[in-house]
Length: 193
Image 1 (tube, rainbow, N blue to C red):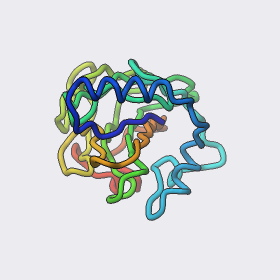
Image 2 (cartoon, rainbow, N blue to C red):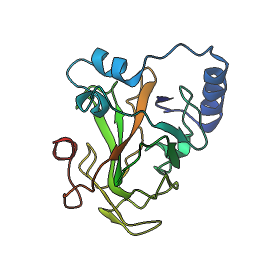
Image 3 (cartoon, helix red, strand yellow):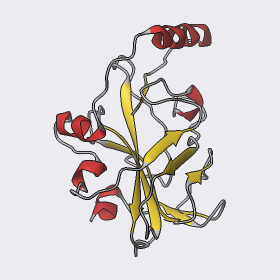
């Protein structure tokens, strides 16, 4: 879970705000499933797909830590660049991966889907930053991207409304036993069926 808040201020004020956020003692954060349960009106994908024997992957974002402020460049307030992600701990027999990035703190839709990527090859255990926002990605490997809650293909960076408390963003990577037979550009509901 990562955090970001709106920065409708000048650069100096943003830097002061970021420094203050870094000095705040970290608050214990619930597991993604608990975040989903508390999010009225919507559940995170990981909760909807929960199964007793689900394997937990370890997911890391390059450039920021769990429960820390996200770099401004990945937000829609700045460069809107998808962050580099890596994962490990997949069970044997994985045939493909899917990534879903959601904001359980958004007002609507809840949760707000920021990124859907699917049919990432089983040999791929990371995506670089700056994935091209298109339905079919051809490099570093061929995979598909779905539409985010704004209706566009690929990554749409965090952009919480001014005045909101910091929002949390949950990067979920799913190890799948087969490639999904879906066309490029599907929405969250289609992917989760």
